[in-house]
Image (cartoon, rainbow, N blue to C red; front, side, top):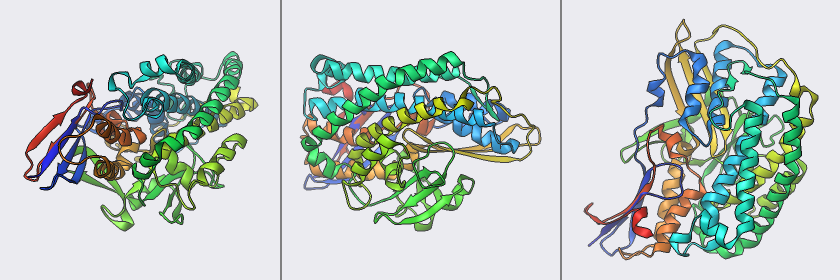
Length: 477
């Protein structure tokens, strides 16, 4: 007799989801599915609204990465206006993005994943959280809290608010940078650099403890997609897209995001409200690809800043081709924090950063616009259409968690096959099923634009679809 394991809610992820694991008649894992269980509605809610409200509306999708949504939305609105923001406006958008990546990556690594990495996948679940880290490793907990605070303070000093600043606008930004805030941010960066340097050292030393997880956490061939600049280096705001195959060959390069529909298809799923994008020339589901920190480091020629370039070279030496295991997203996140600390300093040293021309003005000149940026979790695309009065008639948003949906599902199956057999499942095995999802740092509220609480569940079903066991976070201490 077969069976099914249900994990609900999945814990320490940003959103509400569920995992179902299907067993065959011999009790072996036969299939696994990752469900996102909220109804998406944001693309419909915005219809009829003026285009210029979109950066402020869409940043409400998420409390963790509102800056990414406002930047992608601002770029889509720039295209509708047909204008280019002034140099200072573009520099300030990039500086704001530095703050977002530092705070978001710090949240993912220290608050959500470090309990698995430092306390152990099989450690006591009641203490496997940031409070457990604070008890056993207080210096690391303080580093994580402080680093995230620095990222939030950068956002606040640049835009006026830590969350939902409504500061990115069509044509640029709505206020110049106060010179005193420029000095204050520069004063914080050495501390951020010291924290991320010792965290990278700690993480690299701990990798030997997780050989099994490295081998099984979505460790399979796929395509990779990310944004690069004109030199092929790491880029998050103003570049074009590059797609790499599993052998490390570039199969599509210098893709203007305006033409994303030529390369990316979107498949609806019966078991989830989260759609599954795929690489169109290869079809569904063969066109599986990954985005996010490790994907970005796989597709780029380098970072373009001295310290991050050293770490990038070490990262790429892990494998002869692209780094396959999504466990290494943790490593890549730390390298990107280092990159953004260096980039923030470079931007702040540019005299133009305190210029007063921060916004260009125009009326809508085009009926359609596409904006694309790299969010902390991966590529984010906003595509809008407006009528002759500039009112929204249609919107399509493809978020990072959606790009990764096929890979997350296959990764959950890979981990379940390695660590689960039958319905008597250890808590450590269930935690690894969740941990592979955490490695992608999915934002489920972003992916479905839902409202409300967001935890996750695991279900075990037999070969006839009957639920044999349902496991929620409350069942696990």
